[in-house]
Length: 453
Image: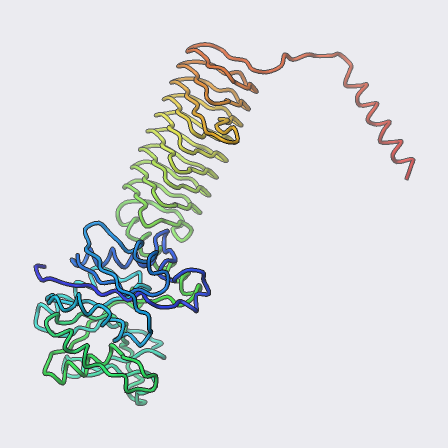
């Protein structure tokens, strides 16, 4: 679309019903602040210019809203006088004379770019004002969209509606697109002659019609236009986002055994033929390549899993974990800031942090890289096709060469050359019949304690 457009995003609310120490638009959905979801949709709908109306936590909200490729201006609304007043905070930006002006809200994070584009397309076809509405079987409390002859004639609030008008199930979302050449003219005509003494954006419908403008409404799914006022609604938004994204991912070729138990982040990348078992959580920054399997009850964040690799069950990949092709991180293992080479195995009960594990290497159960001395972090490097015996502690900084063996139960504090065997444990001693004496002593102590009672 070649038409110029300004997005006006209202994000100045006090968020009192959230009962939170921060603005509600900073609360995350899928690990991304609500306001950032809105801005992504705005940009994807071809609106590279935006005016952000701010209130609480203004600097933090503005920072969260900034995107590459978008020219963002911010203005502070110090008084709350209604939605019409809020939009007029962007007066200077609107006055530049865009073809379209689209009004949306910072706490409506699920609105799709396609919906915003549909409203703009109606303007391009000749409408002057486009209101985005939704159908609901429970319209109580919403403003009703009253349509006659294909045009929107009024938005009637619940308290003002007649019994017949209350039967209407097409409701106002608050989002709208306005002819940019006339937007300021109409906005300045909104008055506050109502019970609350506020300037209502919905008055634009009758103001525009009175000037001979064409006003229409378009429809979008109710879930897409849902706002957020409290933590319960925040959870519902999260659920809706997850359902939408899971569906998109599965349609793209990813298998999920129990999708309702899988939680994705806003930037999770899952390639076709990935298999996700139940109860898996993806934090931000995860890419999983084709053919990989994420077993149940695993948690991944800031990690890259290459083709054919397997993770879990009950595994944790922390930021910087990079699993090579065909590698394995098994049950009750944690990997942080570490390269796991192609075909390498970290199978059981193991911590690998600040490390490089070469291709084909096997890490035995209970092995840990001791990467932290209480102040600084150090690296462990293990070559290709090495074997680290179970219950070993590798005290960084340390290097273990290609093909080396580390005996089970070793504490390794010095470098191990390639193809060498390293043992870092006390020599075993066997004392015949000593177990009998120890057992007899223990039984005697137990009997003495019993006699004292």
